[in-house]
Amino acid sequence: MVTKLFAKNLLLFFLSLQIAIAETMLEQNCMNCHIKEKIPSELIYRRYLTKYSSSSLITEKLFIYLNNPKKEYSIMPKQFFLKFPQKRELDLNETILTKSIKEYLDYFDIKKRFVLQEPL
Image (cartoon, rainbow, N blue to C red; front, side, top):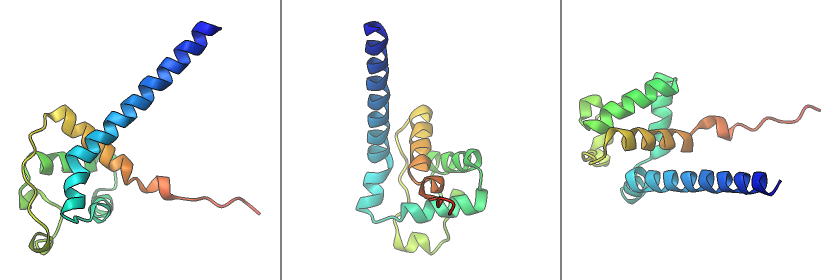
C-alpha cells in the first residue's frame, strides 16, 4: 500500500516536472521573443489552423519555417514583415524544436477554449 502510494506520488512529481520543463522550453524558445517583439502568436496559430487544419500538417509547416526562417516558407503575408521582424534562425536541434512546436500548438489549442453548456 505504501509502495503504491509512493510510486503514484513519484509519477505525479515527474509528470509535473516534465510539464514545467516543457513550459520553460516554450517560454525560452518562442514566447519570450513573441512577447518582446509584440508578435501576435494567437493570430499566427489561427492562420496556420485555418490553412492547414490538422495538427500534424501544422507541425510540419512550422518545423520547415522555423528550421529555415525565410519569407517564402512563412504563412504570413508580406505586410506582416513590414510590421514585425523576420524570424532569426534558432540554434535548436530537431528534437527540441519539435517539442517546442508541440507545446506552442498545445498552448494555443482552440479545443481548450470550447465551453459546452449543460443541457437544460
